[in-house]
Image 1 (tube, rainbow, N blue to C red):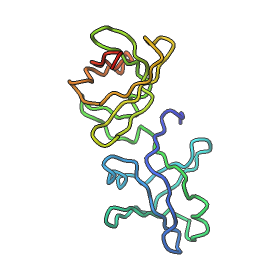
Image 2: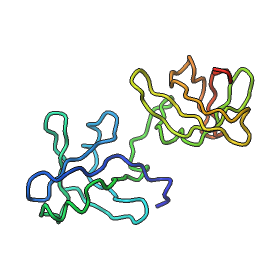
Image 3: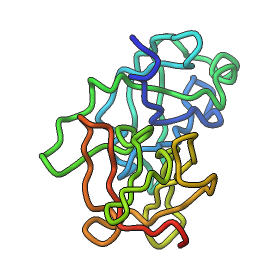
Length: 174
């Protein structure tokens, strides 16, 4: 597997009980999507294949257990470890939909001036809307970092994954 095909979807939280269970921090959106996976990988550097015995939900929290880990001391070694899936395990999307990880690295171009604003460096939600984080490159119009709300048809005009371009309606002096 190539490193760029791995997607971090969860992390192992503190142990729960004495039999190897742990709290699972879901990074899925919605968070319940974590329930769809039973095959996770730990760490980007050294891949460890973890077979999940179960994932359960209590109120808004998840807890889980890994096969062959039956002791609280053994699961403590994994606390804060990030868990990944291969992007090929993600469900296919409809035509107009895209996964956030597919946007990372796209060149951001203002559709009006055709100026390059930078590349998508990340995505975040600051409360009101999802936002794309733009990092300048040597080809950018300036060295300004930008945050653009991810609102389709208002600011996000088109996403062309084949050409590696995200067209926006965003003036450079915003």
